[in-house]
Image (tube, rainbow, N blue to C red):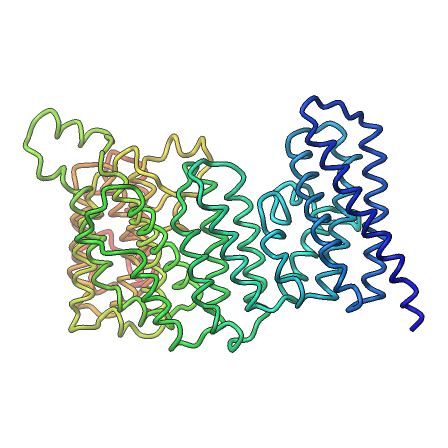
Length: 540
């Protein structure tokens, strides 16, 4: 064929590519930094030209390039790692010296992955090694424009994810996650792990269920490695957790319900026992928090389909709530004295605060599940002859009166300045800034909606009114906020319990806290609107 004439050219260019890669790497690793920028620029231009020549030759020769793959892929990746390290460590000439080299390497890798994806197996560990394709240096800037390094990186990642056989790709990705998340110090490794998770997500989404079944175990291993990784900075932890959840959700969406339940059971087994957990290290708290976080994500996306999975861990739900109650409500058991007065007057710190890490994602998981069940009629909530409902109400009602330590980690949408004015109690109990992240009031509101009848509403209403009459202003505020939320959610049906609420509302209308009095007034207004009559006489 006419294209055979290009094979000698490929041989020559690959030799030039290897020499250029060695020269470039040597100049970057020069301890005395004796290499001038002019020399670097010449080496960069020579290597870039060779890489782009190979890019064209691969698209023309296709399978006839297979014998040359070691001479193509290995130098490309070695040079890519070197330039990524160079750009990551300095800003000098980073744009002029490194950008075109990165682009030429990425475009050539894209051509190889597009043309010969099934022959990349020996090179996958190198492709996903540290400072290679997953490097954060490649993901800086925008993904717009044909000369965007980030866009070229995304293209290579997508081609690899969609073209490489999943049975080859997933083990390499899982191993790469393990390598990046095996070290304890916080560096760029966790950020590279998020890039690998993004590639795994694309690979899962582009595969058939039959292709995924043999590699579910490998995907599971990679995900739990990521879930178990501890990061000190909350924002970094949330980013890694979010990317892991997205990958898990992509997998779950490909599975049948029959496959989902054993997968969720394996996740529960990985999390470990709760009530009899003897692990005093933070790793247990990290696993528990991650488990309820992923459960909340599944509950949000699967809605009522997730309820059978939640049923399998309902005893764990009660155990977690019991732990939270034992820590957050222990102030009520303290003897009268200066310590108790201090707890009642202000937030204190608690040495057991790490035990509370699973609480907020658990509350979010419950709130989403109860909302889904309310939409389906509430049968799940009223299951086991209302025992499930009563257990949830018992614990949530106590948390409404709790005292939240000031050192508790709470996820919210509040700006830093707003966090200074909103107490941890307002955030985790009342729901200030945490409507999308889990709080006690939101959970109680969803529980009321799922209960669906007056008989079950009565004890819930009693718990809410108890909070409304509490001596602590923040508890009264949470109680009246909860009552208002329930009235707005349930509407006219809840008005059968309004007579029980009126004496408390009458007192709260005179409360010294204007915010409490304002919410009480809004409850009255909502009641009058729903009943179609004035409540002024009843409030006297």
